[in-house]
Image 1 (tube, rainbow, N blue to C red):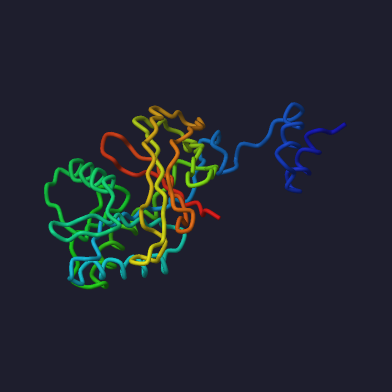
Image 2 (image 1 turned 30 degrees about the horizontal axis):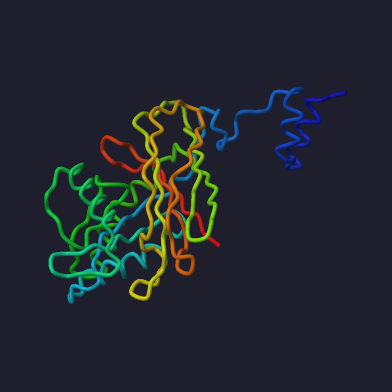
Length: 264
């Protein structure tokens, strides 16, 4: 029986994983698929993470300008970006959407950027390296963030992220499978998850409402895949919308890939 010919026909017909595993013993599967981590030329489209630290209760329009710019960026770039709003207290201006984890992450970003200049709005693109603080108008925020975003969109995505989100009552427990694509190893790798919700004060469905402690992956060799179970995150089942899982470097907090998973 001509097994290689059968393999090629089954592959062209889009056969399932089980069939591929059964046939794998009889023929060598091609490794030119750009999505196959074992292909040294593998890559995925890079999904850029935009994180905005805001306070909607300052009585000033600046944060609203940033929110409007985020709306426009999502409209233009769709699923090429993932957007998270971290609402935090700013001086005497208090927001009910504040979370202590927001301040912790903000502090880490400022430390990695070598800055002690705090304020809102403060927008980061793929971690602390790309930063736009303040707002004179929605257009000015859009232009400044877009200027940082465009070069990142041309970069290859050298990680893939798959996830299973298990819901149990008011908790969601994500399991993430991370693969290193391309031909080089990566070190200092961590992965974390952020739940996104909609709220009356911020209905867009991108407000950070739950966090997982980051899981250490460490070194991930070229073509290697690792699955990690992240801690459960408490959530309001009525308002939770999605979960963003991101891969970042522990040394400089740079985000190297992110994916957004809708929660039904």
